[in-house]
Image 1: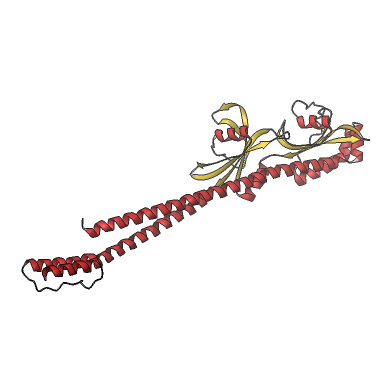
Image 2: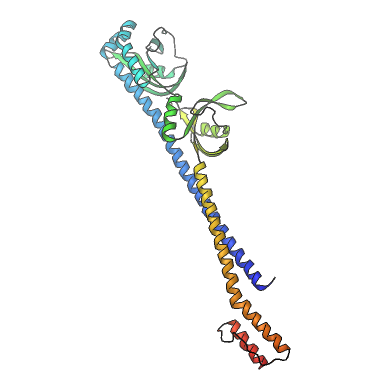
Length: 354
């Protein structure tokens, strides 16, 4: 291998290493920045989800309070006049339900006996104290209780308020709002994300320890039970990434708390990261292309410069040396005017044969 090739190998190796190092550092920095932005967005979506639950609970309380503060309603409930309550509220309830979706509205006698269900007029008199702790709590403390709670038909966002008549507590009135796919779909459409609520199962099966309660996806992704375990046990969100059906996704597993601030399930919020990864891959490919161009330019520059400044002068001196070896002393030595190592070598060679 001649000197020119050796030098070229060294230069190409150095440039290749530098390009690879810079590209790697750039890509790693982009991935870290992307991950930070993804977690920030997931955190924002988690806050939106919790805010939606809170606003629904507040709406339930406000609506329940409006009904419970009507003097005629207070008197009819105190007198346990079911027909009077129906006459007063039923048409209004139907209109409210049609407008904003209020699947449950009912009066409860202490501790938690259903006196009147406006959403099911023929069902009353059953004791709910074993399963409806929000009602028991409101009647016992004579205070407002709101939040998520499971009932016979699933989870709902409850707002339970005490009812008084002539300053005497007579029971509680409850408004129940939907905690269902419709609410999640609204969030999904607004923020281009997917939401799946998981509840722990009494026994594990082939699907794992948790079952999908409601989801914006027809088939929720097969994510890790370990993430749900961590969020459920720790009460804090868990962030991760996963691949599913050929796509790349971010996920935040957020614990869901009931009216008593106990974690009863988790919501998985998923975002596609394919577009961001494609952008990073494009940047990587661009960096590699630029690196290849720099490498080729550097190699060509080194080859050309070394050829003109070193190789050709050395070849000329080698030709002179060959003539001298044949007895020709009257030779012209080029490059002796150069003010560098080649010039010094030419001058020394001239002195040797002169």
